[in-house]
Image (spheres, each protein chain N blue to C red):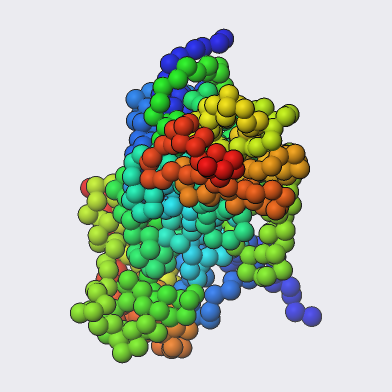
Amino acid sequence: MAENLIKPENLVYEKSKSMTERELHYCPGCGHGTAHRMLAEAIDDLDIQGETIGIAPVGCSVLAYYYFDVDMLEAAHGRAPAVATGIKRVLPEKYVFTYQGDGDLAAIGTAETIHACNRGENILIVFINNGIYGMTGGQMAPTTLENMKSTTSPRGRDIKTMGNPLKISELVAELPGTYYATRHSVHTPANARKTKRAFKKALEYQKENKGTCLVEVVSNCPSNWKMTPAESNKWMEENMFPFYPLGDIKTPK
Amino acid sequence: MKELRLMKGNEALEEAAIRAGVDAYFGYPITPQSEIIEYLMAEDTEKRTGMVVLQAESEVAAINMIYGAAGCGKKALTSSSGPGISLKQEGLSYIAGAELPCVVVNIVRGGPGLGTIQPSQSDYLQSVKGGGHGDYKLIVLAPATVQETVDYVKLAFELAFKYRNPVMILSDGIIGQMMEKVELFEQMPRSTKEYEWATTGKKPGKDHVIVTSLQLKPEEQEEVNLRLQAKYREVEKNEVMYEAYNIDDAEYLFVSFGSCARITQKAMEMAREKGYKVGQIRPQTLYPYPAEIINKLADQVKGVFTVEMNDGQMVEDVRLAVNGKVPVEHYGRFGGMIPSPDEILNAFEQKFIGG
């Protein structure tokens, strides 16, 4: 009989402590799972699971509270930064993060996003940008690219009538309260690791009360982009990255 | 120690909030209640008791800050007036759905729309009947004096935490803006109590806490609704408050709440002087509504007359309580107009005695 290799000394990979056992509901190939995992790893590495409070948005990640094994609240659509403000102001010693999609953060919640950043709330805003409303079935998002098709821009986004895709991370980076704004992806192991490093940095800044940190993750939506996961990643690299370039947008001076 | 002061309603309310050990206030300026946040800022509450006060970017943000602070088990307070309360309804629905405690003050002004900055009672329906989406109730307290405003701040937080439900203090521009003698209670310490339902960080060996109002399975959402309904039945059983005047020999019953009840009371006294045996019920809780006493008195009186500074919003609840036993009539003024005792008496005579 073969030797049993499942021993602690042979372990090279395990579930993050800050993730629950619950099976993710996300579509195959979606970036949410990896983004969750990277944030959970960052929380584990900093050993702050018991001091972290997260806020789930309305959108595909509405059920994020089932997956992060930290205390979590479900916010109304777009209101996560206001909810985070309420929490952080009464529990300033805790780590507080919001996890929001593009519709939640950059359309219905734009005011809350901008004002939380402008006040320099000591929170981490995780912003998943896949240029589409996922949960409601593929409608145009504030970040939908020009000419990109969605169920509410079936002939492609016409910027003359539908407005321009919004680079909200660049916008909030202009605000004095924003301490750190950076854009990453999770579609390759190297990129995922960079994202995790950004999360860790942001949480470390939060400990020092430096101000608002926003980590954008440009991601895919195979289901609503109507592509295979591999195609969607390629399409993301070719179309999303040129308009939403990866890298730091604002770093501490 | 008893402390008597002459205070404006809005300021007395906030002094009571500080003394009740409130942890956080989030609000947005709107007339006629902007003194509330001004008073808190002037008092430098962070120094005085550690109470957090923040001027939010909007009514919507303010109520969601309340949701966050309430989710952590803190005593959270916000205030506004009609148009701002309309904006807060989304947040109130979420707070009720997630079963969190908080207190919301509504210093009502006349509507609809931007309306007027003068006092009104036209937010009865949006306060008492839920207001936002879904089947939920706010516990609604209606003070008629500055003293009651102060006392209700303390009571509102007790009820909010007892039932884990938002409580509204439904006041109006008269009570908010007028000065009266008020007896203040002593400073209470801010609570350090931790609640098992609150998100304060996952405890070792315990499950993480989730605060949500979402249940995707209809069976589970119905269960939430049934639990809420059971809670509301408890509230209805335990928390009804009203004042009754001259009801023992009453042949007619006036029903009026808040500031308007004080004017109606004067009209009742004038009616008595003219020989009409009039009694009055002043509901102090608008939800739960004192339906039982009104129903009982409907067996005794010839008619019930409601007086409100609106188009007869509460009269719907009075009619439900009377249940067709006797005629129910309403008299109201709108848009910031305040009825006088004379015109109330005239209206009563016209409707019930005959010109």
